[in-house]
Length: 114
Image 1 (cartoon, rainbow, N blue to C red):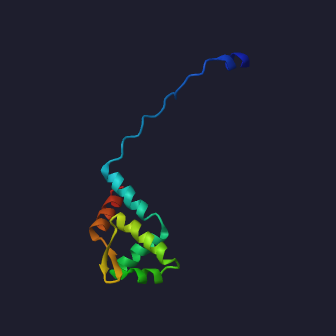
Image 2 (spheres, rainbow, N blue to C red):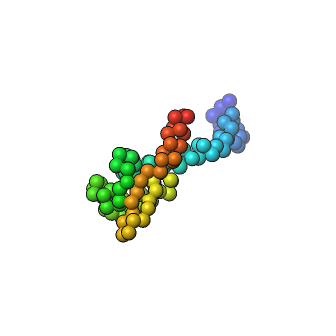
Image 3 (cartoon, helix red, strand yellow):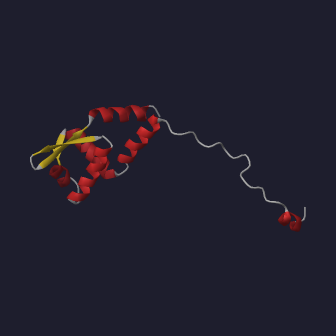
């Protein structure tokens, strides 16, 4: 076929031999992705390590250990709390945080199953 004939050849729409659409993610995959996303920032990983080592910390103690503003640390704690990795308990004017052991156990199992 000459270059002119190739230019005039009809263009086929769609992909040839396109792969099948990926299956919907399983609930297990969704749970793992949600927890992994919560741990997707190094500061949040250090907060989880700190809480694992110390047991319970109030927000002020966590702020003292990180070179970040209190509002930034609070936002990181909110992400971890929303994912269920930490839990907070109001103790007077402070909020004390600790690891949620069942969620951490679930995270370990999900990662171990990869």
